[in-house]
Length: 230
Image (cartoon, rainbow, N blue to C red):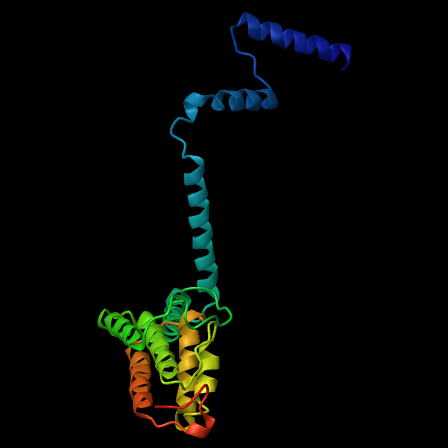
């Protein structure tokens, strides 16, 4: 700065001070002073908390997403709503068709998980579950009744750890006319017990009908497993 310029600035400063005129503060210090003032807690007592701010940002994001989607969907916002309803309807149809999953699919385990019970006990338990609309339990108990009945008739050897599929395969030899139905109900038992499927009344009635038919069926003695039949 030149001497002349410095003198001129000094004179202007003296004039302002003598006239009680406030001296202008430069822009950067003024902004910093304002930021310090606004950072005081008294100015933020009514600010939303962290959760509220996060929710606000989330709904802003959802709104932007819908705005973007409605811009590219046929028919705008109305078309987007129709697409969403169609997707929801498809998911509901799949849920109804596949049933409510209860646990992850696993390998087939033992047919009888508790202690030994008679055919009559398994049948009574199945009917009690069916009367209460507990179709999964009714199907399981009816399948156990079928296998226990075959064991009591000496068409199957009593064997711990036998699976439903194994029982159906073995019982199909002395009862070939019912082999396909035995395999079908064994698969349904596995789907309900280990595959997370939900049974219904029709499934139970199929097992009940097979149980009654097997009771009246005459086995082929030459292929009976584990001894002679009644």
